[in-house]
Length: 238
Image 1 (tube, one colour):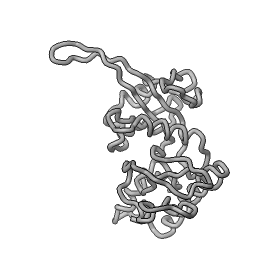
Image 2 (cartoon, rainbow, N blue to C red):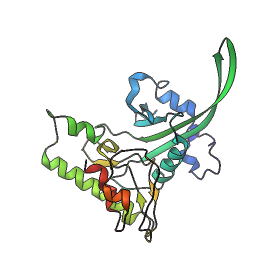
Image 3 (cartoon, rainbow, N blue to C red):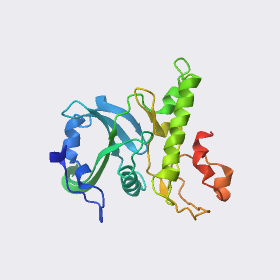
Image 4 (cartoon, rainbow, N blue to C red):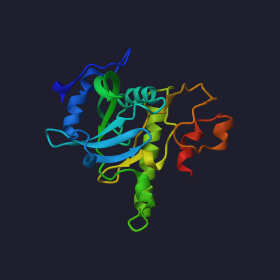
């Protein structure tokens, strides 16, 4: 994919150059973002299955440009994912941030507009998200699989909180079954770092006015946080 790299349009961008991919290349590997390649959709945008020339599959997350705060969340997610390396954290294989110049017909006249295209390329997780399996009563998860999934999530969280950078933990802030992806062997991987933040070890209080992501949080999170970030598991309690 090296020969398909592109210039990043993010001001002051510090992302690794070798991870940049062109919009044209991502169109090609997703069959022009065909509906047949859709893996899922939400308020953030649509995820497509991408087929690389070597036969490898990846997930291409196309961000909806109309989503409030999508630009900042995209930068945040790419920045964090490119710096993480753990079996229980989804792997980022590339990204695209380009400005497309489009010619559109409006009220009988052609106009030219600029559209920012943001795409995130992740490793393909064939079993989908955990919420699908929890809701499947006929082919649900036995307790052994549930235990292994819970253990894997805990290992991933421990890496974010204690191992990634000493005294600078990453707080996910939107941990829920929909953001846990599963591989062929049901290995869980934490995904969707758009709302994640960095915290110092000395920080014992947090205040937020951002209500994006999961609407449920523990009461303690709404009031104060004084220990080793107990609220990080809040979304899994619902």
